[in-house]
Image 1 (tube, rainbow, N blue to C red):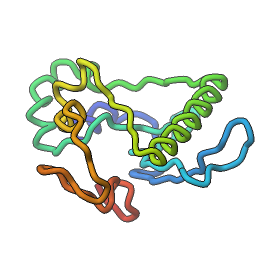
Image 2: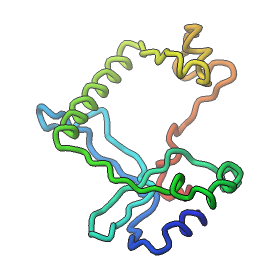
Image 3: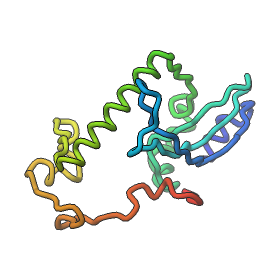
Image 4: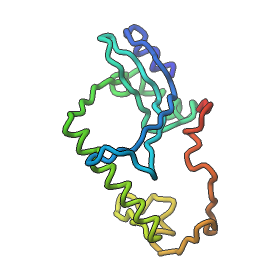
Length: 169
């Protein structure tokens, strides 16, 4: 973070909140009713107020330890700071947001159908299978029994510990 603060030390940005969790209803775009099975939940890395008064939600692409970050980037920060530190506004048009709401509702319905029938889509393509830690299960059609983890895997009581309240990470 030292490099970030060095690069943006003179910016007129007010930090409103960090690691803010949220939970919202998943709304059917056709009926306006909330889903009884799903909610939208997540964590926003940072909420800031820009110099012109607009609020901005900042998201990291991945979590790294300070040591990993330093090893990967330190040699290059002083040489190319604009390569690593950039701010860009990404506009989302109203029709894009409406389309996303429809797609999100469709995905929720597909998830319910998969749960009911015990059948799940495989995400198989050349860019993911070579590095996916679950490729053996997916590609070898290993039958997974609910409540019992296959050899080499474990069941998690909380699949999203990062969303727990009071989490400082």
